Picture 1 (tube, rainbow, N blue to C red):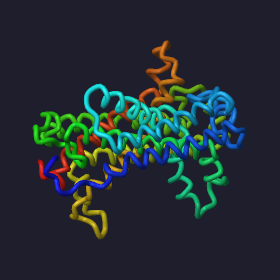
Picture 2: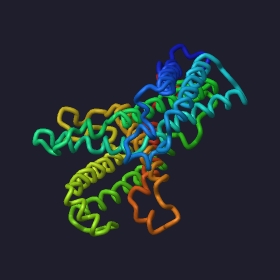
Picture 3: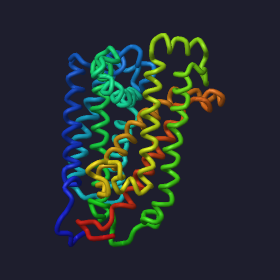
Length: 351
């Protein structure tokens, strides 16, 4: 927008933030390359997590120099994105590694441990006054390797923001909303987004219910898709009821997904004391749904890696095999919610 007098702030700092993150993480790579402690992947990860991690076979000697090089190169690339306006092949050459960094850091390097930590948090919060479960949640859920995965995911989100800002700026689109004076695509109109967003939300509602039903069945001692021997171990260890609690929160989350397509996702319901009838700020559900989508994406891509796709009976009956669908559906429903509620852009004035 050439005549645009004001601009959203985040597109201006997104690339600088991605550059700072990359420089800092490249510095960690240098630290590990020089023999520093704390290498969090592969040989430095928890033993029982290595088999399911994408970097489960990584060593400090072989991987740390790669982390260092990619981090420092990424810092330079992000600065180019912040300062230079490119076109044609040069623009494509910058956008490709930027989006690749975002996808890798958000979806490929993190694993389901982040989803586990988030899922069990409400259980520990509710049980805290009663001293249950008898464990330190933060020690169990957030050892250094898991904290490192969260740091990587945060970096990926910064890279996604930087890539999106650069993509919009170099296509003469509004940095805030992405719209252009050339006109919007038909699928981005509120009416169209309402149609395809509804199907996405329904899908994101149904998928976690499958997982919830299975975990509830185990808690009730029903060996649904599970052997009786393993079910006995779940009850002896107490994990059966922890799983049922996790399933309950998954079901609650799936129900909240419907708020992306129903009115109670735009206006606070009557039972919300003090807020009933007031407009829900779009940023609230958009932020929460986007973060959950990122967590689901990492867990879903791990499910892709560990599922035996050569045996249809195995993956058809596995609740986690459908997590990638859940992540894509929730992300799509979130995008539709944004397109429906964004209204006129206060920066470019387009509708």
